[in-house]
Image (cartoon, rainbow, N blue to C red; front, side, top):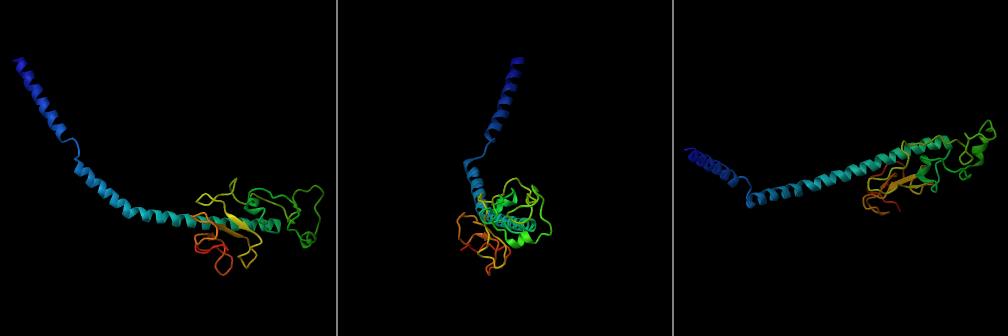
Length: 199
């Protein structure tokens, strides 16, 4: 009798496990339908997300150009001039060499008292003292596409005497429609839209 009960118990376990095995997976048709729905969703939503990313990158570049302009204004207050094209934006994070470029006789004669010998608070290059770094990073930030910002002073695009700053944009090529610039189409200072190109 005990043997018979064991046989019935084993058979009932077999039936239970057999019924679980039969319905434990998805059919190929169900998997293909789910995959088709996912592909459809990605094809509809993907381009919108990528467009938002590009707009965010362009806005980040405009913000960084504005940050550079503010830092350059503080630099110009301290040094009585903007950094030359050769010094570039690097003059905002490290003290430029004092090679005498850009100084005029008006700069040196306008001060009331001459600095003492060995006084490091005065720079021969600009008639002022470098009080940087003017941005809060150890090195210059790159644009969202990994390229360095371009800088030019004296400006060729701004009618006012402020430096030209620009990013080559998503394609990384100069003089294309996607360049993001610090001047507007009429040559006035200010952050440009992405449609301006450096000539």
